Image (cartoon, rainbow, N blue to C red; front, side):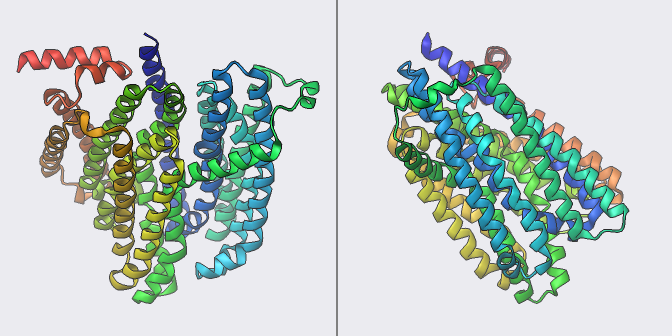
Length: 530
């Protein structure tokens, strides 16, 4: 009975984080559309050159250190050591405060060098503004970890919504004001970095209030130390770095692009301006990839404390079933998202960004969604069973593969080389991490029904391709929008229907998912009707 409650709690937590992440990604795509339309491809290029650095700070505060802190706190709470859990929460803040200040100094001082590597000295100002985001990270990360350690993801969810909402409003308001006043794309990029800082500050203020309302810390408790500060610091920094590397794979891939695409395209024969414009167009695929990996991101965040607790209690069957089902969901949804987006990419490109530039390249890039979804979910499982070092090692291998292929392929075949490098890099990470999970929990004993999943995706793809014949999207942006939206809706419905008809998920699996009872009942009716 307790196991069933754990399963329900896990999936409801994942559902909440998925809903929040989807909201955030919709906002992320939503504000980038007007931002690109306001500042143009060069403006979008400027923003995407500095975005990886801001993302590093945010991911450290969301998917990196909070996961480790939550694990430390959950271990103490499992033994009813409440005071020790509070003590760990304080220590984590002090440790991350020092780390955050170091990150700020490093980026601020190295901004000229980074701008030189990017072949654009005008990026120094935007990069230095972004550096301040590392000063906000410690407070956000430590408080999120405190709540997640108690399996309470609500504060994390609310802070994410607050951060993204305030950030979007601030970025658009500042950018519109600057451009209206005659500022160029680089000034708008600095303004966007400032708007991001406002969003992060709003999230910290909210978490600070929630933390002290939840249970204020007593000053006199500071004198009672149960842990050695440097011992806690070593564990947080060591394990945190390992977890963060896995969580940072996607943004570090983007950082590789920021450092290598423009120089590579110039070596390929493009002018400086042409290379920057091409990079700006290529970056249209990044927010679309982020939307496609929402579920995997949320699963990787939710699964670590649950599997960590089960691992401590030696619940091998529970760990295998949870890991296998999480990977299965990521496989099915990731494959459908990749195929669907690739098919409607031209229409989506026109709908969101006015033209269909580099649509074939962006269609290729869409398949990175599938591999990155598997990689992130598998990394979460490895972290939960104490193999964070192995997950980090595989992530680093993938990052090196991505960077190496960028350096080789972009000068040879142009921007398509960056897309190939991204897909191959994520495929390497996915293959290594999934195999490592299999070696640990014996996935071969679990019913994945992968052929049924592929068949469901083929049904969806066929339906969307047929639909496109009836909507001449090339005639206008409006028709492209209709085609893209209709394709997404029809594709989603057909995929869901095919998944139930082909019974990709068993009744037992469906019952573990939110609303699983209703879905299982509907699948049973379809089975009888067939």
